Length: 305
Ligand SMILES: Cc1cc2nc3c(=O)[nH]c(=O)nc-3n(C[C@H](O)[C@H](O)[C@H](O)COP(=O)(O)O)c2cc1C
Image 1 (spheres, helix red, strand yellow):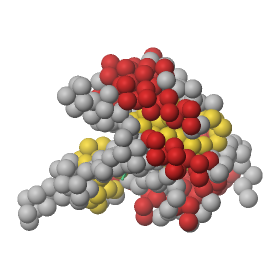
Image 2 (cartoon, rainbow, N blue to C red):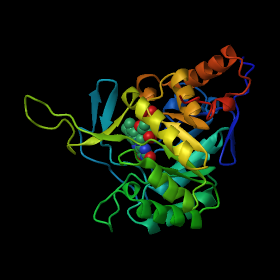
Image 3 (tube, rainbow, N blue to C red):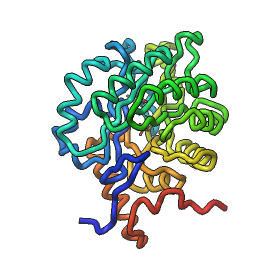
Image 4 (cartoon, protein in one colour):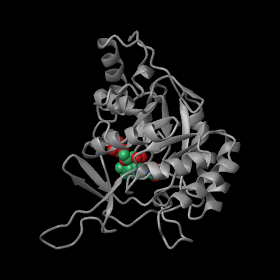
């Protein structure tokens, strides 16, 4: 058993360790719960929810890439009411932070979901702004400061639990969006979501994904995530949940040194369901080796040249 204090606090939510699983890569925990007790985790960012049930996009919707995957799953989910009725009670029997991840077509939909989820007793709401805004002609909320701020204000006005806004990396200057979201009242930020990419079959001349493009995740994106967490940590005074390509304890340490208070493990879970637990143990071992008594001391401790 490690002597290192692994506990962290993210926007007032206490977690026994800083390792969370990333939205869309861990379902609602049922399948992974067959491998180990979910109490091992600091928290779970649940599969992205929408107001109504969604079937998601047509297949193929996952394509492998060197050091990562492209996905165009398209928010397949049972809808917020089914989550509250059928998934949340089981999750609640565990001792971990439950973070509901939401996507809306309109700011009003975000507000309705925040109200339902706050009343149902999740610990935090993660607002995914990487989805298209129907009213703004399909432009993603996360790419325009004013749209990102509008959704944040709506989420805050309808939530009684902390609101964490998940930033898109598909922007020129992520600090501009981070500032807009912070000014609109967000309690925390999470980053990064997937980077838009594309693969083409050179024999058929067809894109591999049925949606033509998709989001890149996995080890390939880690350096982008570290850079963006560092930039955002320097730009705003909000706690950060860092993610993007974490597969080892040292990857998590990089995101924390850059400024993250906690980290999420996503794509790595597909290759190894135990990845989040290994990341937790490796991070504690690294702290112990370096004579650091609390993993939270990694946060923001980078020494830039
Ligand atoms: C298959 C898949 C589904 C995802 N679904 C969601 C989602 O529903 N909501 C969301 O905010 N992010 C979603 N993400 C993004 C991840 O939560 C995470 O931000 C991203 O994959 C980077 O972390 P990673 O490299 O550790 O996977 C999804 C990622 C993958 C690979």
